[in-house]
Length: 369
Ligand SMILES: *Cc1c(COP(=O)(O)O)cnc(C)c1O
Image 1 (tube, rainbow, N blue to C red):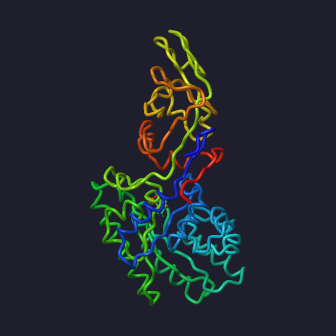
Image 2: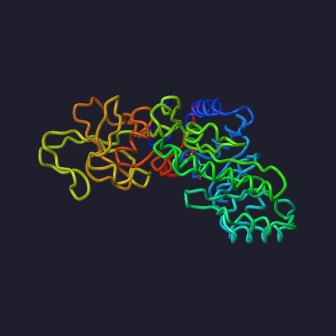
Image 3: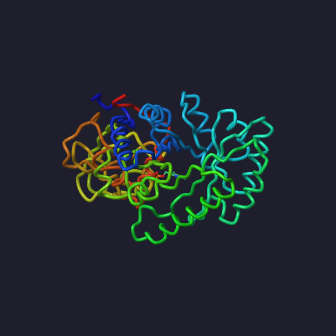
């Protein structure tokens, strides 16, 4: 392993492969796998991750916005890419890059149809998203007739799949609610199939859905967080490997006397003789202020050291009293210990928020290409 010389996010592509194989092993042989690579593949690097996943045999990709899909096309990704939350202003670009929109409302359906028409498309693949209880994006069950009537004779677009999204697939206390979502989805899908006169391609599950609702795989599953090493469950986390390790180094050590303060607004005051270390990473890199003031701990040579005082834009200070370390030594913010899930929980948030928030200023390094 290379010595850490600055703040880096190290991405382990072997771990990605392990996670992919694990999730795939939960699928029926015919179930397709959609890799969710939105938000820079959950804060890692969408291009590298998608290239690796494409080589591993992922059948589909999804991003949130058109611009993310354009970047994947530029990186040479050939597999179909679904855009989960497209905006009409980007429809021409989306079509020019052969990205496939999720259509979730009558307005978006009409506007996309107009875009397909002005771009002289025929049977352009679109995905109909139905709201079955998340109440975020999606057509309602009673939109089905409108959709069918609207699409009748409009050959510029073609329904490639119908899908929905679970609200609480990770929460076993919400099984009844989730079962209801599954039933509603089945009912809507059947109605669409009957009215279109063919069997459509269907998908519903995210990572936790794959784990908790194997009976609802339909034709494809959509996994994001699991690929990156987290399963919203301790047992599943133990099977997966976090792909990203956020590392930095000690820029400077300080000997602090009793009653001295550290950092902005003097938020930390020492109660004795202390050694502090200043690290080149701050809220501009994705370590928010909520991690400061001894809420969160980082790993210095196997020991957990608290982040003291306020998190600065480009720096944090940690207490390394009694830890044998020197300037230039490596510090792990998250990785194996603490994991991103554990680090996130120090600030009452979840791995999703922490890892997607690691800013583009942090250099990405790769292992296991
Ligand atoms: C983000 C997203 C996913 C992936 O969810 P994970 O919990 O990360 O597996 C799947 N489907 C939709 C619609 C999403 O927005």
